[in-house]
Image 1 (cartoon, rainbow, N blue to C red):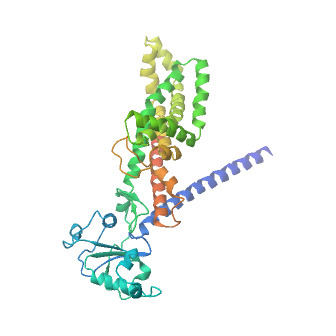
Image 2: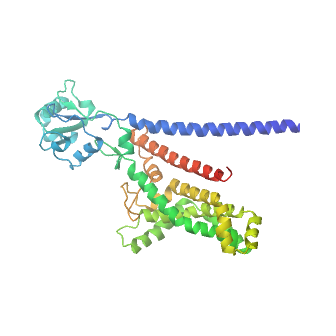
Image 3: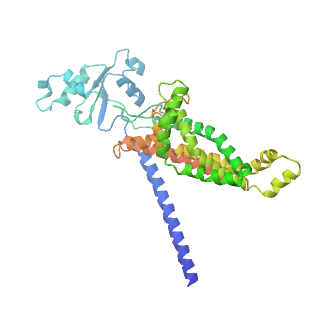
Length: 395
């Protein structure tokens, strides 16, 4: 009977592990499947067309150039390799500026013919309108019919997912915002975290350690939104006043909040590594005449370096994956940051802020899944690094 129960428990554990592994694998497959769908979407908003006069020599316009044209930052066809003439920007809502209600028809049935006439008449026009109104005998020229490319996503410098006629899905500002905040957080948390870990493992009395340990564990249990409120009320005004900034919601504010949140992870893992140093090694060092600080510096830390490094990497992972607190204190601005004193937006914050508003199955929706895939790859690399560093010592 006892043997049967053991087999039953063993089988239950195998089934549970298999289900968990398959579930994780399916989640990863779904994530990458939805993310890769971004590159099947057209550059111009789906259901719309972008057209020019048939005599216009310009054959190709990038997604970014389309945005610049409709933002009136590009105003001459010469800038796009065409003739030296001003660009006439046309949106579908401008139709009544060119045709009377009688010409458009009582039920607007003449719109396709009117559009065809307008594009043939205006040599410098670029027209953006619903594909529904594209005439069957259209005599103009459609441009920007290609799909969104990986270059547009991985090399894009702007994130405007709702821009018309061409949305901008540039990864660079979000990736740099994530790295700025995460690197700043770990640079702030590392000295304090390692110092506290050394103090608790080697210097603190048993009574002091019994007080600090629960406090640090309590810090780890505080919800991230509470840290966000703390940062918004305390850290943000402090940063604004200290550096005389127009706003305090900056990458530095996010780094400080994340540093506080990463401290429990760093302290706990590093302290465990330091306490695993064999007692005989420390006693041998002291017996040879080394002081306590020399023993810590020359024996304990080198012996525990793998565990300390793992603590650092796990702290970075904690910082990179944080969402709510960062969303509240970093300004949520999808721009390329140059210093820690500028507003930024991170990848997790972007997903949290925009996923509820993105139409299911659309380019914006799939772009957010692509961001999730990028975040998964970053955390995977960190996890592999932790595993490698942890096992390096035993090789």
